[in-house]
Image (cartoon, rainbow, N blue to C red; front, side, top):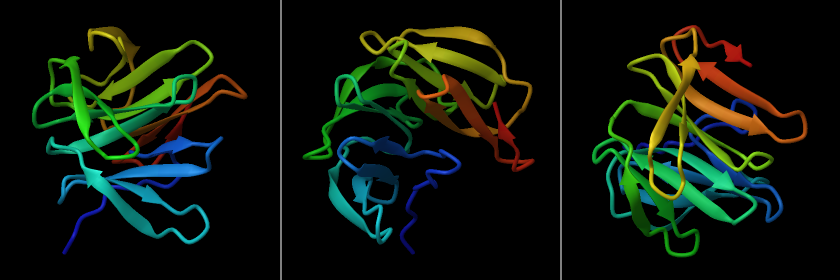
Length: 165
């Protein structure tokens, strides 16, 4: 059975959206491939192979139209071509425990959640350097999403099924 990592927009789990273009992206880790998801039918269409395994976290920068992903297998921050699916290494994030990404277009900041250390992180999109913001207070944050209209970062705890702000 094919395992498709796509998370619901409402919860913001491991998905990335380009709202202006009406695109929702997901990661099929069995491929491993980038998929685009129809917002009207929910059908996933394979864009192409990413070239890295275990890309389970995605975030879209609407300012530059850049899709970011983290390969938990190689610990690399990637930029992913939304036309071909091909991932390009930015640099190492130094851990395989980043299970969620979100991009704040107002501050041009890429956030990550480290489920191993329970820390909220910022990730430099040019170098992949990681800076710790502080503890999340929940040990299994596997989903992040940022609402630029309210400047709110949301998270989802996979153990408690709680929506966090």
